[in-house]
Structures are given as structure tokens and as C-alpha cells.
Image (cartoon, rainbow, N blue to C red; front, side, top):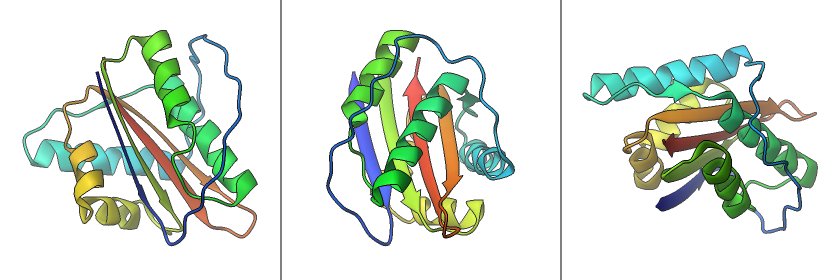
Length: 154
């Protein structure tokens, strides 16, 4: 099993994320237009370099949304509790490999993807040997967007 994580932001901070999550599969997730656009752009990029398109997964996206909520509530940008998210995805979905990218304060999906592709660690996750992904794009009270993108090989 392999776990990787990378963040891309204007600011970061340390903290602890204490959330309890049930070990049940989340089957519904209401994607917003930013999430759908970002996922489409990631898949278009992957296909353009000869990789498989990733299948979106509602359970993974719900874990991304939980992390965005944590980051907004605590005014941080980080990977806190990534181990718990990974363990949940491994337990519930049987994941063999997991990677995570986060980003903050990019106004458009294209800008977030461009920043990720310009960072070797983020690009490695986007180009990784994965089969599925989840994504959440959440906006805080000041209008700043938080992105959490988890890649999974099932």
C-alpha cells in the first residue's frame, strides 16, 4: 500500500483534526459545478498524456468534503488526519493506494489544476497509478475556495 499527500496553498498551519466517521459507504454526493469541472479537467489532462480517466467516487468525495469543512472551520490548509481518511477508504472501499492533494484560494478549477501540475508532488498524484478519485471544492465565508482531491487505486 502506498500513501502520498501534497498541499498547495498561500498559507498553512498545524493542528489536529478530530472527527469520527462511520465505517459505512457513502453512496450519494451532490457535486457542485466547480467539483465537476475540476474532475473533468484532471481526466482530460490524464487522457491527453495517455493515462486512464479516473472514475469519480461519492464516498471518496465525502471524505474530501469533511476535510474541507475541517480546514475552513479551523482556518488552516493541511493534511491533518489524512491517515484516518486513508484508513477509512481502505477499510470501506478496499483501496490499495491513496494520494491526496489540497489547494487553497484558487478562483478557478483551471488555476488549481495548473498550480498542482507545476508542483512535482501534486503532479505525481495526478499522474499516478489510480483508478478512482473524489474531490470537494468548498467556499468559506470570505469567498475563498478550498480544494481536497483524493486519488485511489481499487
